[in-house]
Amino acid sequence: MPLIRPFAGLRPAPGRAPEVIAPPYDVVSAKEARERAAGRPWSFLHISRPEIDLPADTDPYEPAVYAKGRENFERQIREGVLVRDPAPYYYLYRLVMGAHTQVGLVATARVADYDSNRIRKHEFTRPDKEDDRVRQVDALNAQTGPVFLTYRRSATIDALAEKVLATAPDVDVTADDGVRHTLWPVRDAAAIGTITRTFDAMDCLYIADGHHRSAAASRVAAARRASNPKHSGDESYNYFLSVIFPDNQMQILDYNRVVKDLNGLTREQFLAQVEETFSVVDEPAAVKPAAPCEFGMYLKGHWYRLRIGSEFVPADDPVARLDVSLLQDNLLGPILGIGDPRRDKRIDFVGGIRGLTELERRVDSGEMAVAFALHPTSIHDMMAVADANQVMPPKSTWFEPKLADGLVSHVLD
Image (cartoon, rainbow, N blue to C red):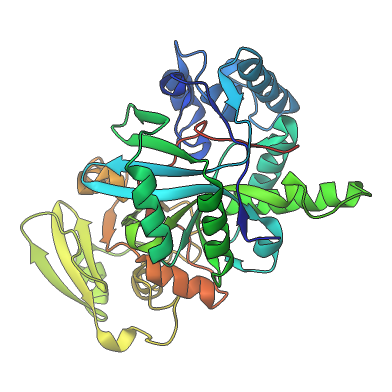
């Protein structure tokens, strides 16, 4: 079986995409989802966050929530809002956010290659979040949230994409956050064959975002394989919905940190301890790090530029040399006492999409004592961690723009 294959996508009917597409289920709270879906009966949020159609105090993991999602999904299909393509296709998906453009391939990726680590991971998953996605897939009998994958760019795929992009798209819609989503089905059999063969010749793919969705797909496939005496390996449950982008088009933003207190230290004591490992320069304006090993720090109304000494940067460890690790191992842990950033309630994380003003706001309000701005993790650093079969620290990457839910879904026949 190939690494990826085309599929008959379930998509908004012609002209209906603006009514349907929605942000990914995990980037909006229930409150935000209710607000975004208000007055939009066909918003995919009614499927991805169906608790918005139940009483406000409903536990999002209750069986009634998944049942409501199935009811809403089936209604959209019954009413002709979502329509399935007549044959298996690939789809080119272009995202435009400001000056940034990236073009990916919507496909299904083979679960067995995820299980064997040919589709490589770089994050731990949480069982409760996996359970949630398993229940959602089982309830809908479909995968509606794509896994965000990347690969080392291919001249063959670039050339094919260029030809397809010169044709008229099926969908071209700008979401309410200003991101433009454009979709082209690839119907030509020769092009489909070229895509399949080109990807199957690749050593691996990398998960950029969607570790819980891919882990859930593996669990669903295992359960259905075990219960299917006629299992052949060709069934749709052996593949999971993916959007695959070349590495040279990926955009990773900074993922910043804020901490509630100085761990009992005065400002002067804290700065003195920081200066043992970092150079500290007082700056008149907000500091956006321009290179790895450089950090911005906002403390009591002042910005500082921190640079870590080269002797503290391990060159041969793909995890320890990451900026998020350098900050954790040399400042957050030993000085501020943040031993486990995954669980410690004294630390919070701020995606770079919110800007440095959000760091200032969190500190100036008194909610937090100090904020740190980081240089974005590079896609090649992420790949190096995955290649080494290691795990990145929590909140290491913030990918933008986000994929839209509801643009293409994968039905499990």
